Length: 135
Image 1 (spheres, rainbow, N blue to C red):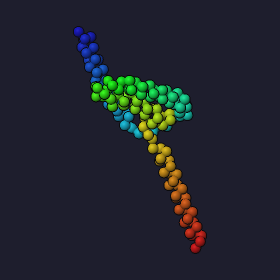
Image 2 (image 1 turned 180 degrees about the vertical axis):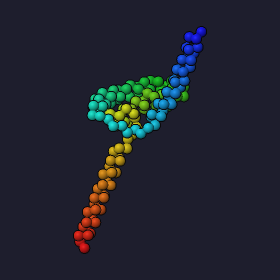
Image 3 (image 1 turned 45 degrees about the vertical axis):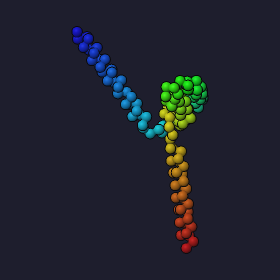
Image 4 (image 1 turned 30 degrees about the vertical axis):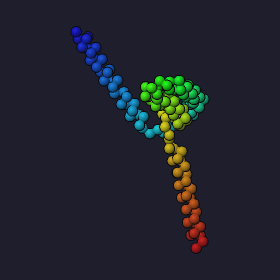
């Protein structure tokens, strides 16, 4: 009798945990996209994951075209396109090299802005030195 109670409690705990997992996954995807990828991960991504992603994107596009009459009648063509084409395309093409999560990282823009600010500060300093020497 206690065995049945324990099984029910264990089942209830497992069901509660399975309900929490999507919430935890959602919280992780809303974090910053930027990841520090190692050279090994970048090479693996470039040589294995990206070509595989391109093949999956093409196959998904073909599957979407084949399923289009049915999804149009069912009213979920956009959902099918999102799952079969857009998702794999984003994972393949809109992701930093070596990163696991899709999305754009602003690290290049931040780096360029920092370099520009350094250059402008250096030029302003040189102009100030020239102005004081010219007096």
